[in-house]
Length: 178
Ligand code: IMP
Ligand code: MG
Image 1 (cartoon, rainbow, N blue to C red):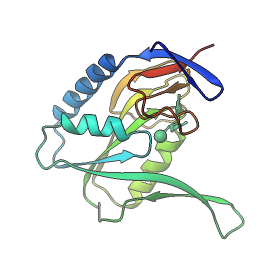
Image 2: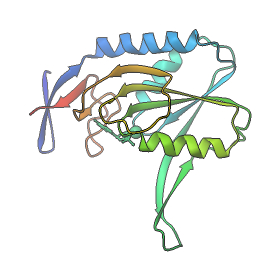
Image 3: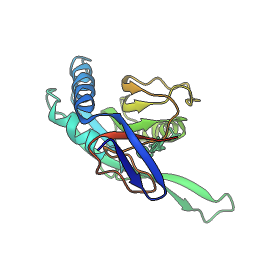
Image 4: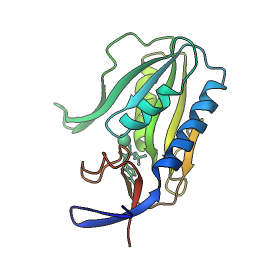
């Protein structure tokens, strides 16, 4: 399938499943060789679920653990409105070596929130791994330790990434057709 229609839009294949597999192997090897000890991987839901599963299968570091978080916004009781919170970090993660697993980093706003929330938990170290990165869109100074592939500012879908919550099941990554 070179093209796919999701709701009102047409997408074309951009990164094939075989290329995704190569990227996953490469990033997993980089993590394995980074010297990180007893890592706690934290996968950011929903988009990173397939990436996280595939990376974990390739991790050979002793005592590797994985947990899942979701960033939620809710209407605060104060006048300020929306407050961000991490759902899922219930255990004590202080003094852990964290590796955040993201599907895509665009502006970096989400990543910045995740990092500041993790820092409040007094973790020992935070590293960031992302399948995709949009450098032209990135506005933050946070170092991204492991990047699968840098891409232009196209909207992409598939392999966990969604368009309006659909398309996550697609085995390839597609980009919006102009
Ligand atoms: P950021 O906060 O701007 O870095 O955006 C990060 C989040 O926006 C990602 O975790 C995705 O959920 C979503 N996102 C950004 N770009 C895309 C895209 O091209 N396709 C699907 N979701 C995207
Ligand atoms: Mg996401």
